[in-house]
Image (tube, rainbow, N blue to C red; front, side, top):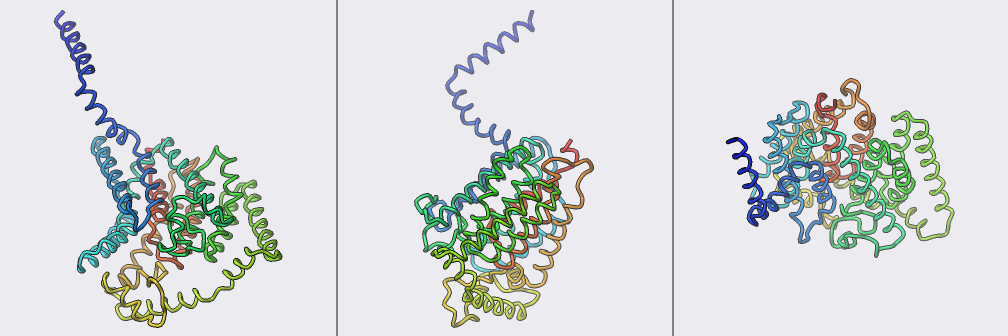
Length: 433
């Protein structure tokens, strides 16, 4: 009888608490905490969306840092609640830590500069965290489906914006800062929210590879996107992007060993060639623009001059690199006679040599060698999207590394995509059961 009485009192107390407005307010305040802990994959793709739309020099300049901090907080809280182990992979974690340490110690020797620390975060800190967070978050099929949907939507958006720019439908482009010629680079090309045509082209290429590998059921959507993807890549007006996309499209079909996909990829390559011929024989302003871009030599000469100046700086300090605050000023001094708005090395590998010397490039080489090895060491019996991702992983890395010859990869959305997939491929074998 006493047990029944105690239970009745507990139920009555619960009903009283439910009627209490303070408890209702507390429940509403704790609801976001519950959702963040229950659906970390949604938080992850939300943060990646903020990275995609990170507009420099605008009022939401720090939005990406807020989104990143919220993601780290919830995943850390969830990891402690579940008593999960923090992932650590010596071949990947240690080189990334080494690059972070080199960049941080180099910046700490100079007066605080928020722009320098923002670049360090984009190139080293955020990718390091995203890689390990992805291992913790994308362990199940539902979580990977969230990432798949994000990839499809991101690709659809970038394709739409690029084609709208290509056909001069400027009113359809959003956000509007993409059209602001005072921001970023390449205002005359389809540069997307990255404000840089190479970064936009690399994202289109990588996302195109990912939708093929991840989407097992949404074949019609993927097929439609791939039909218009070549036009979006063409709109970037960037020769390196054109080359990497053409080669990767053909290799992709043979890598996945699907007859229909092989035929589709070859058909896309043939259609692209025919479209190029059609434009070349037409009397249209587009023809002039494409021919001018293909034969343009001014940017090539300026880029070679930057490479010469950067290589000379590396030879002056081959093992220590240049200080963070003086590197770009020294590069501008050595390029006297070139009236450029900003002076960058425009080559990821040369930038590493100039910034950190031989140790920086060595760590980067070790990191990407071990990233390539992820395609060789999959768990037994792996199937589905992860198996397809592992097949296309060397191609995805090759696209990234090829374009890194023509731009300093400081775009955290692009780097974040690569290291997110790397984290998914490092998912523990027991979590795949």
